[in-house]
Image (cartoon, rainbow, N blue to C red; front, side, top):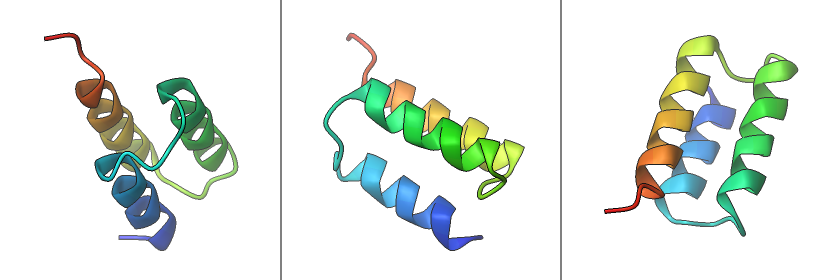
Length: 55
């Protein structure tokens, strides 16, 4: 498990970002430059989306 993935997951779980869109853009950049894998990107995106679902 790479450090970028762990830091992003921690940031999402602790709500350490301004908006969902901001965090998603960060994930997009990390994925685009190869810092996280496809599986890691999909998992982090799913976690982020789940935290913002309307109950």
